[in-house]
Length: 440
Image (cartoon, rainbow, N blue to C red):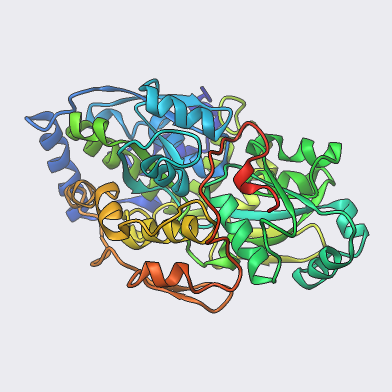
């Protein structure tokens, strides 16, 4: 564990009931927290107090790490045992076996487990809350830049003129990174299942695969895009927030059986992570301290100077362009980030359908309503006096100009010029190239 002494004073002192000066609560919030403590100490006390909590070495695991190590869980009667995972398939398997009680999860991973695609039998799953929005990136190799690829347009030209297909990596066949990569390529007119080869690589291994020449680019969470630039191995050609500003990304997930057997534990876990999420977003100082904390070898295992800039929204693409991103990684956003929106779950299922992972339209709304634990989340956020979006449906316009509002997911899935709707679903795993993600 990183020692508390390694953190800035604002982080050391900002426990849930002893906030840093810039994060001082109003009387209303102080009262709600006191009420919450009394509430979880009574008949609503956690049924299970020690939780094995899985995470991947990614910047957006920060709220789980902060909740577990900075005193946010203990007031709710929980001990959070952080369990770093090597791959998303390994994390999935440990959730299913019960070795992990809950975990950071790719939105698409949780829904593929629910639907029985992506290499595991169908299992009822639960999204307890959203963990973050934004903060992923698509990165290409230095040799591609040397070949003149520096934009989407030049990439299209290269793909059309080259005799060899590019090989692009993502982190799990049904995960967010696969879907951001596919969406971005398709928006350029590049069919992700026909015009390029794709394979699966765990996030921390992306840069070494670039170095070895096994891949020409990748989509993954930070800090691995920034690390590729730092190592001179590549450049960022697109951010995920340029595809969909404030898009859904990672969630706090568990099996539905766990949420039903231990509802008070699940509620307390949401409350602890909500507190940590609000703390991280409260100030730049808190974000900087969090970047230092998660850089430790037992967490993300990457230099602070690689993690911190994009954590704070300061981007440099490796091609000499720098900017302050208005839709950078965020963990709370005054409650906008954390609600398990029905429309977010619906969207990922539309992309499964679009790319041939589902043969038929699922019962979109019924499945999302079952997976997204809205009532449990609203109970937890309400006990903390936190602001909550009024509706579980939200809308957005993505980079191709298409409007998504969740009103007709079946029609939305069929609305794209590039798709694989005629393909059958395939088993996929993230131990190597996937049939459903190879060229068709």
